[in-house]
Image 1 (cartoon, rainbow, N blue to C red):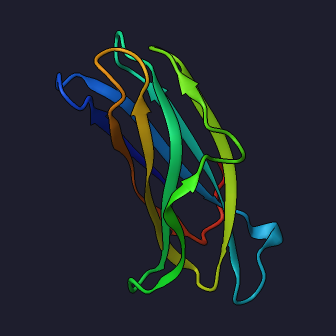
Image 2 (cartoon, rainbow, N blue to C red):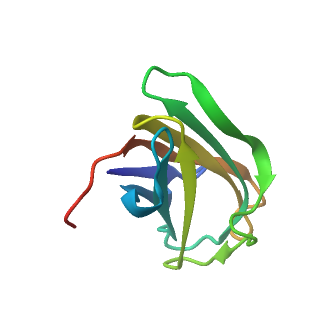
Length: 140
């Protein structure tokens, strides 16, 4: 299951950051009443001339009915111990995981970014979209 979003620059309207979020059910570590999911995040600076840095993140994990299971608060520093700087054309990718007390749900969130070159040090949010979490074994 995948979500793909692109966030425009804060002032020139040119696309700045492309985010792909993908989830996968991990049946061999899941148990009855607890589904485990891995997720992969790919963040790319697609602006032709501006550099940006990932400062923080915000994630909300929900059951299928919308009930919040866990929330990583907005402004939680970095991702997997990093606050990567992305020059034009550069990307950063990481994987993580979560356990859910249900078979179906969603994860949605954003990354708080800052432009560190170009027209100034403007802070902006790069959406990660809403990614389905489905406890269904996959062949791919």
